[in-house]
Length: 429
Image (cartoon, rainbow, N blue to C red; front, side):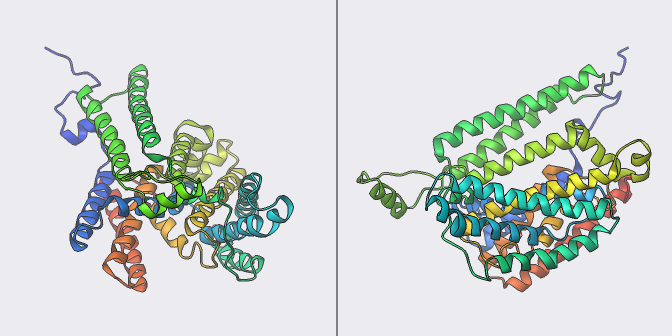
């Protein structure tokens, strides 16, 4: 008689059990597919065109970047209501730096303008985040109050920095962060797609080998292969769609004219992957590694699961809070770079209501408000779902107030569904 092994669990497993897929994640993916299909039907096939998918991807980036940091904030049982305002003041600082201050020192278009602008924005975000963390961690002021005050303070400080004026035009190199102005082209996009596909397969295989070394149960080989294939298809498919979005002929002609060349008859080129999307991919990978592979990540989830036990075990939860909010501030600054470059100007309303969108993305992505539970990829998927809803409603012609009503309703519904799911599975509510 064959003896049951840890790999098969001693019993016949269902397909979902073999794949070890999170049913909550599957539900989110299913909801996203339904949203896309419904809007595609309503818009007569315009929603799933390469052009709209390209626009949807670059519009999602700024919220998704901040949502990765919001996961850590909520996991540790805090909240940050100031992310939109911090984005706004970082944007105003970078706008003033590259449009008013640095050109007077170096001249317009100098290669130092962009890096110095980015450094100024990152330092601004880090300083505000560290201040928030110090007030929450060491002064024991509730994060809700600290960041609510920040919501009211920082956007208006940014308003005074720019005298309430729109700031532009931005440095041309800085504009590469915006998406439309900064893409890598079709050839490099395919090369990156192959690289990320290999990386995904290697990561899944290495995780399997690690489980085997530690004698943990693993998926059957066919299930592991199915997940690898799904990851590769998703990556290559996404890049294929972006590579099918052709650059408008008028823009190509202007580019050739600027080089003093004549565009060949019938010449076609494609956008490919936006630089801002690549930034998001890198941030997601880094934040996931922090969450899963570093001491900081273990401390974050330990403190969120049981703050008292974490403190008794020697974790400096006060400094941990400062680190988390500082990281959140830096991510707000990076989001400000992307949002400002995409709009090609600093505007006073930049980042408005991003607090709602970022928190909603993290919560819809499965981050528990009770703390201790959350995933980076879930928050990004939540951001994609939120942006898909808003973009679809905008294409249909739904008024902005009603769009916010729908987003608010979806947030409440998502939390209710999450609570019911945790009750069924016995997880902490």
